[in-house]
Image 1 (cartoon, rainbow, N blue to C red):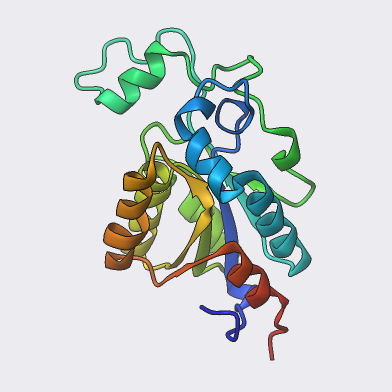
Image 2: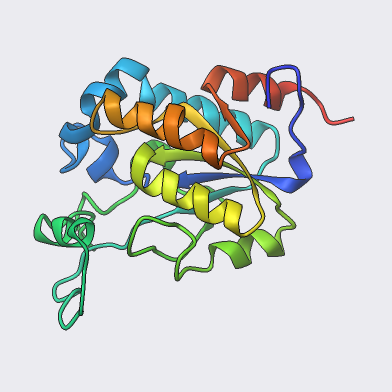
Length: 211
């Protein structure tokens, strides 16, 4: 994809991963981890632009949420990984709490879809995301949200394995530091993603009418 190539709107959806207060609000539990990169990139404004452009082009928007913390979630688990354990210990995205609510700018609107919550990093594993996309006739996905080298990367890789065309938006995401962002977009991204673009390039491509 580039600014000179239109997007097949009938076959493309925007996937917004984890638009929670805990990630995107200054008081959120995970905001300090991504704040430096997010601020440098203008993450919130880029997310707003990407969502507005997708809505304006008529693309389905699907929220891809992480599991909301509940007491006893991991009781009896054989091998929860460090990622799961860390989130559990810090009560990240706690159900019923402010941190587990949608960041107001990105709350679902009428017509949006919300996939079932994923436990690990992939928005596809053990959820209904693939089913929702297939029912909508979607074969191409554009990924935005958090975090570039975990949930975005894992969801993108899983999408490719399922046969989807995947676009990453390098400045509509963030991570814990520049090394993680470089790994996500310059090292790992090109091994699976079909396109890696900026928000400006995405907006320009969405503005080109389909012929």
